[in-house]
Image 1: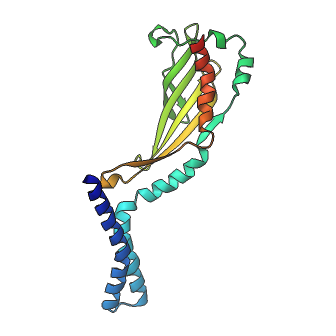
Image 2 (image 1 turned 30 degrees about the vertical axis):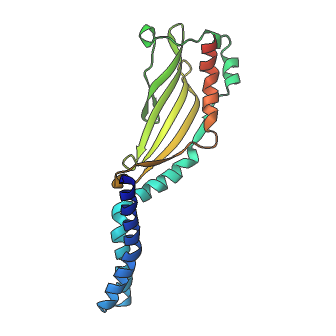
Image 3 (image 1 turned 30 degrees about the horizontal axis):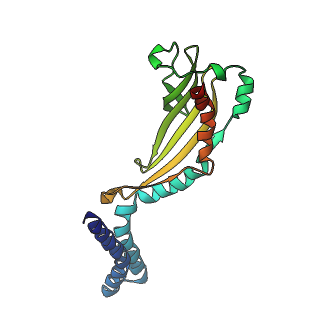
Length: 203
């Protein structure tokens, strides 16, 4: 029942958006306005219906399309290279309770944004590898950028970053729909990070 009501509201809105410019044109002609005023009334009637609903959606759609260019996974250091630069370290990494750690970095500051630790690998109870997650909001949370970072804490270098972009629609109608874009290389981050954490679980 609610779904039918929503379709009815959407249908009325579309009908109003289509007919408003014609009504504005007809009214301006009836009042005997000049050509410029007729155009103004036609466009104004359309915007009168369009702007209240879409004044946030349109900027959100533009931001979403812009951010999509950076979505996906960027590997800064291949796993094989990291293993080669850290001989014997992978075999000694372990997941331990945070309260038993000697050194634990709960947050990571990257591009003036704070990211929260999601999972960590320790070497002699000192945090060695950190998996951090964060979110950046745009246009009153209509667009959100979800970011995962794998970070070598000891060397202070980023190993890999994954960015996913989500746009939310139709909040003003009481229903929320979302569209997510993960980029073409989204899965690579999962495969990359599994090299560290899956190896630890096997051993």
